Length: 180
Image (cartoon, rainbow, N blue to C red; front, side, top):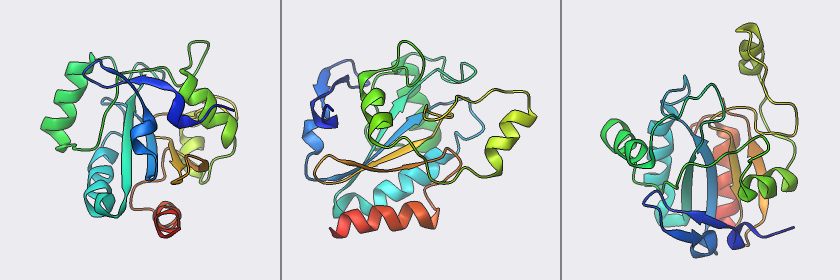
C-alpha cells in the first residue's frame, strides 16, 4: 500500500505537492464541503487545530463535491468561503473526488488502510430517512468523514461524518497519537 506521504495532491492554490511535509506530525484528513448540513464543523475543526497545532496536529481539508453537489465552488471560492465564514487557517487542498470511479488515490489509500469507521450513529439513518442512499461500506459515507494518521504516516482511525471535533472519541484518539 502506498504511504499517504507519497501521494501527489494539489494545494488549494493549485501547486503540486505531497503530504510528505507532514511527516512526524499527527494528521487529521477531512473531506469538506461548504453547502452541507455538517459545514458548521469547520468551526470546531479550526478550534481543534488552534488548540493542538503546537503539539504537532495538522488538519488537512480536502473539498469534495461527491455528495449532492454540496461543494460546487472553485478552489478560490472554497478558500474564500472558509476564510470569511469560519476563519480557517488549517491547510486546504484542491477539490478532489473521494468516492466513485474518479476517487483520488489518497482516498483509495485511506479507505484501504482503515475500512471501518467509528461512530455510525443515528445520523446515517437520518440520511436514509431523507431518501438518500449513502455509499456502502467501506466507501466514504458523506462529507466530513475523518481519517487519523499517526506520526509515522500510518492511518490509525476513521470517524463517521457526524463525529465532531469536540467528540471525546476523536479527541482521545488524537491525544493518544500526539503523546506517542
